[in-house]
Length: 59
Image (cartoon, rainbow, N blue to C red; front, side, top):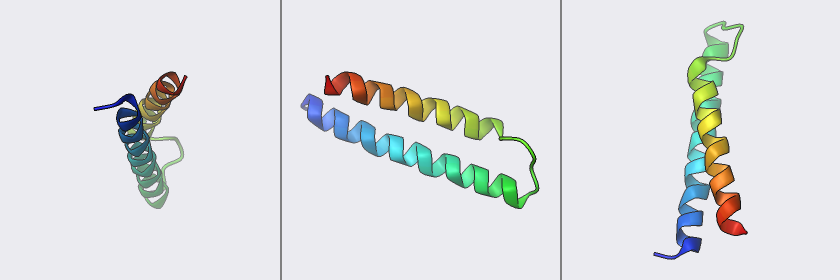
């Protein structure tokens, strides 16, 4: 497996994490939440970490 293949997989994971975070936010809004759900915060932190890895591998 090449670095580029891993980078591509990480990009897909970042997109999945983003989709999940948006879904959690949408559900929270529908339920009347007034603050960001902890699950969304974790998903966003994970996505940012994956994006950092993508950037490092792209250098």
